[in-house]
Length: 219
Length: 219
Picture 1 (cartoon, rainbow over the protein chains, first blue to last red):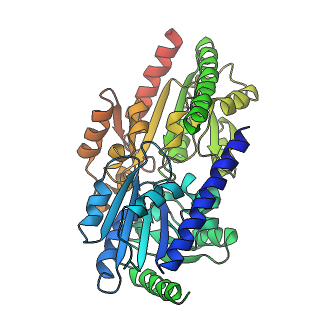
Picture 2 (spheres, rainbow over the protein chains, first blue to last red):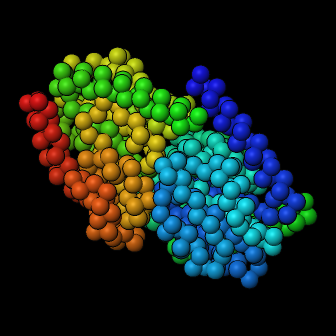
Picture 3 (cartoon, chains in turn brown, blue):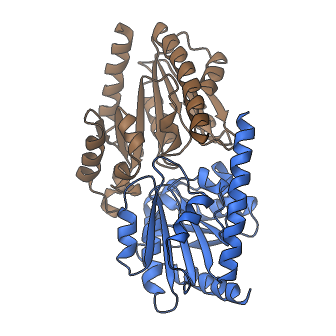
């Protein structure tokens, strides 16, 4: 009975996600579903990317939070178009929320739409939102065992950003071990060690975004 | 329809949680439901508490993880009785899982049962597991805005442990701001800044546990 309910929810989500994906393809908008634990640095990373690539791309953001619009205000300060979704307790975004959000945004000239999911390493991985890529941030302070302990989100992600590398000297985190776990779940995952705080490694992440925007335009 | 399903699940959980609570009361076992984001330090804190209080109390642990039994192995190394629950994708523990776990444990002489929940700052807060107290760990690396952004878990908790204080010099985290947010949600919350890594502040947490064990014995 419980399984049946869950399947129905996931199937309904998949149908709307497929509609969104077709619409994003037609409009040649690269869509990134950005996920992580609370406080791993999603918003700080986005702030940096939005500022550093603002001359190259037209970028928009959908912010997902249980409540508050603090993150949307931080994003708006970069000049990017942003819309806040408050899930009111919900532990993840789903495709119908994105469909509603997109209907209220002006995305005709957008190159990239970032969807910043609710801070949660479990539930968001189960719900596609029409994205081209799931990107998961793992802060090095969380520990190198996290890909092994929370496998679905890393198995589903095209990119793992190992953030807060400026704190590596102060924590026990083995980059090779974390990367090895992630690759054992997903041999094609691309891994970028970055510090959104110090900008270290962001160039590689931005170069990846440029290639994906190009690919989407030619798709 | 969705709301109806969720209510049924929560009501069923509450019934089992009430049964567990009555059983723990009869056996005078203090039960702590320990919650946090992934990697905030639940297992490290438990390791320290289990070792430092082992002469005083008989303590047991139920470990909740999506998969792996890595944490249970770390706990077993302290000498404490431990049972691992793998939720196979589930984002939180619920009362029926604890009921099943408890039926497989020997708790007659236990003073404290710690339930280490799945790493998640959202879903575990909605499901009581017969505990006397919810205790939430917030790592200072996650940011001082987290109680405002994830209010339910802090509103429900008797204690907030601000962990990884050894990293305070390297991050932007305002202890007063985080504490203020938590107290605005829950005026009775007790807040202990600790570093499970360096032992800093653990004495206050242990003194709180001693008082709660005493209260439970006299209950």
